[in-house]
Amino acid sequence: MAASTGLFGLGSWTWRSSQVIDREIDEELDFHIECRTRELIESGLDPAAAADEALRLFGGRDRIRRQCRQAVYGRGVWLMSSLGLGMVVSIAAIAWLTNQLALANQQNAAMHTMLAALQADPEVKHDLVGEITDARGQPVASAKVLLIFKSWPGGRYSQRAFHQTSDKDGAFRFKELYSSATQTAFLVTVLADGHAMHSEYVLYKPNAAVKTFQFRLQPALEKTFVVRGADGQPLAQAAVWPGTRQPDKNDEEFLMYDQSGTDAGYKTDAAGQVRMALFALGDSVELRVTKDKMDETIRFVVDRSPEQVISVSTTSGVQGTVTDASGKPVANAKVLLIRKSWPEGKYQQEPFVTNTDAAGKYRFADGNVEKDREALLVSVVKDGLAFQSTYVTKKAGETAGAFDFQLAPAVKKTILLRAAAGKPLADTTVAPSQRTTKSKDHLIYAMSASSVSYKTDADGKVAMNVFEAGDEAHLLILSPAGPQTVKFPVDSQPEQAVSAGKP
Image (cartoon, rainbow, N blue to C red; front, top):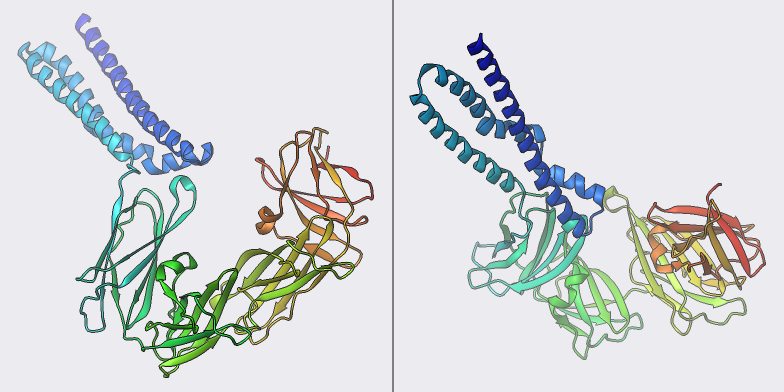
């Protein structure tokens, strides 16, 4: 009876030991997950997203627990049972079991090492490599390699530009560039004299293997471009670079971001001429041209002539003039453009911003392209004047005229922004998003809000002189709790309390 009781006692002790081992596995997992969560929070991710990302990096807890049990738990239970049997059969077995327990301890240490290895090291950086050959498969040396590197460290988007040249074997290498622990994307553009511009864009998910870039360049025409402004005069000493190249009768398009433009190294001379042997016959090209404050896009098709005149178009781009009620130019007004387009049937929406000059004029190089279907929202904001907007849709083959504005005086207004309970909303960012008059709605999209935002003081007050008395005003409130829109009728008083929410 005593022997039976002892064996049952040993069995229960063995069962308790298995629970201890399971608990140790969970504690080890929790430790590594907590460490990774703290690192993600320190990199800028909010706590909830950091915890989710840490759990995702480790994978299923049940899977890891099974692996650890195979290494420790199963052997531990079997060893404890063997210990009970060994006490009955032979004292000599105790020495053997001692050795087995030591082995189990070693495997337990291996389990800790395995768990630590499951956590990816975000600091390990890898090289991005590629090879460039010509149409015959021969290496292309001294080619300009322009790289846009996109990454999401800590969940935050980052975009950087790099450049270098290929070596005598046509190879290039950007050393210690990226970590496989985060999502990455690469736009690599190759410019080589006598070869058509080529590019490739690739997006990789975390832990994916990044392949070697392989470029095989086609021959290009020897071309000199004479670049002229809208007035017909040569644009001397202007920086130029190809934004896009689309081969004739080919849906493929090769890109170069403006962020890499100055690295391309092309500039017009005193006569507005620039040699660029980067295009093939029939290519549709968008050439970016910048000089001082001018930023233009010239679109043309490459012809056979060794010298081709290209000019800044007066029909493309969005432009206009802003005046006050008396017709005087309004300088330094903020002009916001939202351009909607449907390239290849896919909807996209882009924001742009600029200021009016001393003559009240403004111009965007982007948008209002004759070949594209577009929708354009232009909004003008100037302190002391009621903001206005115009929205235009146009079909491919059309362009919109000048976007001119005549702004009426705004009521001088201090807004007291309060929460539903009456407490002032201090240090809160707000932006005008709409004003409704008797005849029209004037809009500012949320994606442009940061360009015309204001901030309340400690008492929840903010001066916002952009509405007329009688308007229904809409404000976009940006707070940690999320964006919120509040609307109210604008009175003629210099100070007006506005409640952000229902009591």
